[in-house]
Image (cartoon, rainbow, N blue to C red; front, side, top):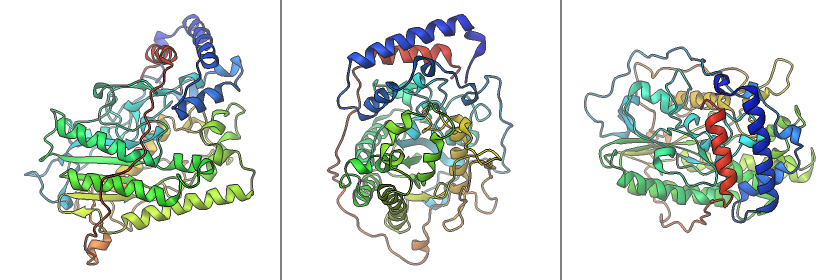
Length: 451
């Protein structure tokens, strides 16, 4: 959210040029190794003119005075006693909220006004766990849960800078990492489990925990670089390893696994403006192939296979027991980018890199996820287009609980043994040495943006 009261034109102009000068110097002289996302970002910036680097996108931010109307439901109370069954957990029973994933969950650039603000992770407005203000300030799953339980632990309280280590006091339990692929998920999962076990504000054995995972789009973006590493089989393997770890070690947890997006239509997002150069860096395997080419057709098919494999994995009894459940939330399966009435992409939903979502997009994701949580398998809402704002639903009066029981269990299927949860994951640590650039970006975000 842009605060025009604290950013007069002379201050903005001066800081823009200072930032451009520092960024350009550092990007030219300090190549980064071991951080693919940062390298891709820096490579993308090289193609921008100074004019493009400082171009403002006011439609991608929100006035500080903006407020959503209140959201109230007939029943917002917790259960009379702490539930012992995963099938009887109400929204107000959730004591802890957490999230794992990639840049969509770190909310990278979600309130950036220029491409130079993209490395700012606006975790506090992230769709699944952002904790900025209240529901009326920004709609996130955490802020919706807060309406039912104001003392829920874990919402992300502030923004961070990609590549700069951040404490839990800044990330909350948003332990997603920008640039991560599915092979990184077991490492994120271990971090979360260890954090939950030791965090003073969490009763590990008694508290009901809600975790949201969305990951896999970077695997599609990187598929052409290593078809073995980013195969469907590896996607399923690392997802399975992570979910087994959680099921074996964490009591009283509900895990939302969100279906990945169909990504072909993101190619259209680059068309409306000539400044969408970063998209070619972040998702080259999707953006660079020619329309109708064999490479593009293969990638589209792999994207579909990822979705199908996730359904086959989770539409089963494998990850369900009395105090634990994994639920596939499919609302994104067919989602089309938001469009204007003339059919052109609504760029107010996309950050200046033309790849990630602004707050507008994050809020639609939050609403879609919330609604799916209170719909049974086989009857869950699917987004056709983000052009149509999603209307939040209240938990049904006759079933005020989060739906967790798979149809497979209803049909008599018993939980199946899975592979050992030892892992074998390839872990990549993303710590950028460009601390000066990170510091300047963080100063800029703190002083030039409202949130």
